[in-house]
Length: 88
Image (cartoon, rainbow, N blue to C red; front, side):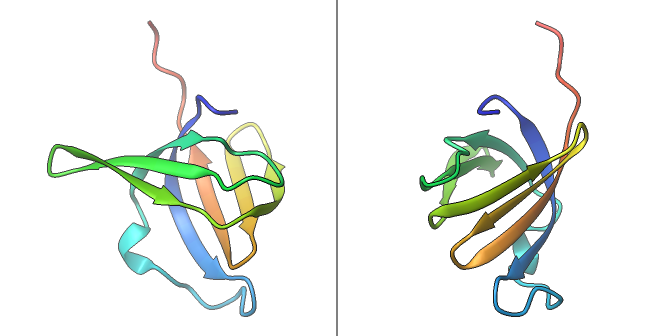
């Protein structure tokens, strides 16, 4: 799962899962790194030609389908659409 590329479709607070949060992240293309239950994963993204990292709080659950992934952390829920792999 650490090689997936996705687009953030939504970020929600774990306490109020129906309330959108971090709207500036929505639509951002990210590379998933260290996305495993029990660890603090990372979302890598490019902004103005510079690689940046969003560090997640400890991951508590991951729900994955062929085209979507939901990452539950101690503070947030990230809903992402997985992008198709690019050929080498």
